[in-house]
Length: 383
Image (cartoon, rainbow, N blue to C red; front, side, top):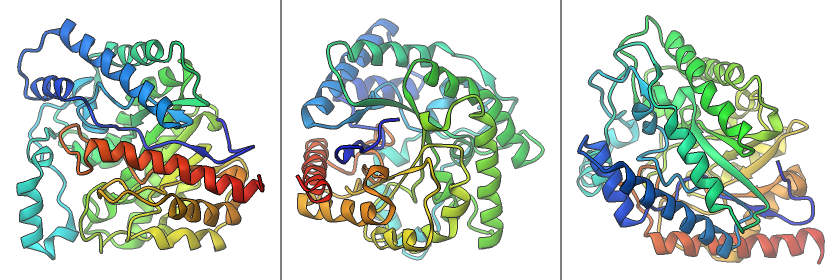
């Protein structure tokens, strides 16, 4: 994994807005409508090429495929794995319960949430379409031809986040379900590594799980759940060097109350037990920006870096580059400049149909990220 050895590197969380034509095909596939495979492949390959070039032109250092071929960062697995044949439901968010009028407005305005397919696990989990990942990798490789980013990554859903959205109705216990998911997803994780890309494990369950699936648990019991999820992850990635993996956690990529979010300080120590080289997390939205102070007390273990979100991914404000630089410098002074890569709070299209940030503004925000990192680098390196 490339680190900020001579300047602050930039990256993002993974999902980027899909072009309208590709989104239409993704939606039709999600609705189980017939879609011409050749047309879908051509549209996805072209979108991947475009999004790679746009990241390069924007100046992002560590880039990915934008998740162009996925309907959602976690729910995509229902199309690759067998076993999701039971009726499920989108996880409820307890922060909405205190504000029912807002919740109703949010749902009515969020088509992507209303239409998202979240079946439950009703039978044993196994692979049914290994080719989908192979096609993702091939498209990304082809799109990288002729360009030279500082580094590259691909995202994959963690066992815990799959269980968060696709609930268990088959396995005797949640632990058995997580173990089964880990055993199956290990293939995807190792394939991404073998392809030469950094693996990003998407693990919002470690934070957003507190006010969704695990809302009834005490804080101490939730921490036990986090410990279990980390143990499952560590087993699934046992064959991949830690410095080739980064982990993303978040509290839900939506503009809402978030007043039931678990504090970073309560989960950071179990999260740091993950055998990964970097932790990506929200650090710029109004509920969590103050938590940079956590690292005044928590020592970053050797061999780990931070990818703090210094750009919000749920509002259409374009952050001033000076503010971005301030956020970066705070972390650099606490954990060392070489251990900070500037990132975003979350993706700009975590679900293809849910894009709270206008696509053109999303790219403007990423340009501000790059400029802010340049300013921070000048301050931190004195040049």
